[in-house]
Length: 172
Length: 260
Length: 53
Picture (cartoon, rainbow over the protein chains, first blue to last red):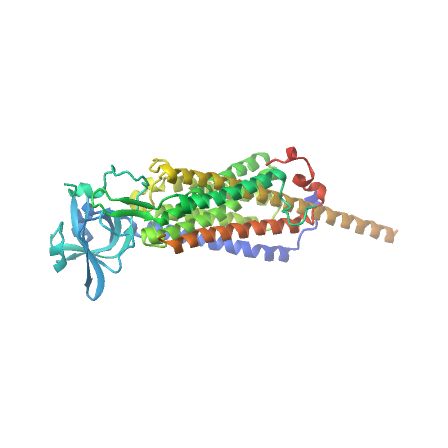
């Protein structure tokens, strides 16, 4: 009853008051669409395993992709084409790939801690791969420029956990 | 009315809850910074120290708030919205609004804390394409949309009905956020749930549990106050309408007297 | 302590935002309460059992 009798704002006044929130809602809808577009539309956002990128090397040549694996001991700090780089061997499920990562590595980057790298396959080899103890040396290497650490969800301090690195035959 | 230096939305029980929450937050801070160890362990194969080191202390905030902001608060909002759609009484609408407003703040903070934690641990402030982060961001944007919708001046019931529908649409996102790390394992950097797999122990586990309890108390306290503010706003609008009607009637009576 | 800057930022931002929100709720409540008769502010004027919280 009160709603019927209460004086309501005039039309232009009401429209003016609505304009701000409506603009915000439109912007939010555009933002949601943009997030979905970026998330679903970019194929490089899928992580491959090391064995997958080795198996699909021919199809992946000249494409940028993401690959997840575990760096093995024997990381070499060097420079490639005048830029600082780290050279190491990358492994998952017993498959190895040599990596030249351009730029500073992640703060928590170290052997045995899985990382996701973004880059491409390059044919050839680098001198530093000769010094790596577990190098793949298969005539190809991954040239990457984006590195993120794939942290696990385990906070226990015991040491009984099996790690990816063991599947690469390094425990012995 | 209300006493000076005291929130008008306070009651003896809410004050007690407020003090308990404050005490809990201080205790949580002491545990998080001084009593728990940093996350450091020896790698079983390489023998080198690995872990998050002191960055783990951010998780005592992030995990409890992530349980509330993107899950509990929108869930409470959705349940209250269903309540409104069935009962059509303002209590449900005001409750939904209170839970979602507090939840939006928690959800925004969860994204910020995650970003701050991600820089030292993941080596990135933000990871486009990470399904957990993206679904949480979409929920946050939807919750902001809910709050914006409530600011559009419309009929009280129409506004409550529209808001309830948006709250229910936003709630569709909740199971997607929760399962995202399982469903899109090859597209997400975000780790799986530590608590559901119980990969945590001792004081770290205790502190995390304490954080969840303390933040649940904080959420309850905030929602309680926001609910009471919402109720006051509703009463204030009704009061304005009643005053306007009384003024109109008085005006009409004066006019009648003048014409007669 | 490692990552101190990140810890201060994470905890600090959270604290500031929550405190600002609490302040804004209290401030808004005070301003609205002045327009509502005390008889209709249930949790302050009635017994606790009448509050649906």
